[in-house]
Image (cartoon, rainbow, N blue to C red):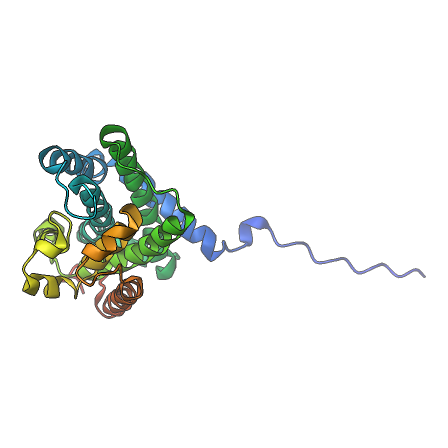
Length: 282
């Protein structure tokens, strides 16, 4: 009597396979970007406001040599790129999370099968994509309207990459952490906007950093925007300008250390204080 061969187990259905973490993160990032694209007001603020500021300051203060043969509009471009990263990762993300918490969106997401890590990583990827578009628009406008030179040295773009990634990571986790400060979504702009605006004034964005009082410089050195702006100046300004900085150099190691510390601090505060529900919910 012949033996009937044992049947092989049926392959698992693709529908039963759990998606990978990378797939979940990407799907969440795409969803965040779609929701962002539907908010015309938010898109205009994120993309057009930095361009309007660049045009305004370049028109008023362009042509002023601030040292080392650098025009103020070149200096301001680097500051606006750094400030745009902070605005997108800290201010806009923090406000949107506070609003989502107020509307019970976060509560529903927390009750879904989506891992919290995938949700937050999707937020970071979304911020990266938006920031890249914002920076590309700033560079395009600065090159076309003001003939500001774009770096061609690969080493400069390598510096841009790590400053951009560290700055975005630090800004994003801080935005997530600070989103819990606002008890209501509509009060979030009143909480977060003054923080960003104050840092912009003391971190070398609107003014040349070394022209600020020394005590303001020391305060700015504690916060990430000063180092993010200085890191971007090392990319978009000639190396000769490093001598005009407060320390007489670009301070790349210090920039990396401070941004990494703020990332760790923001991550620790997020883990400790982030709320999925409104403060009054039980």
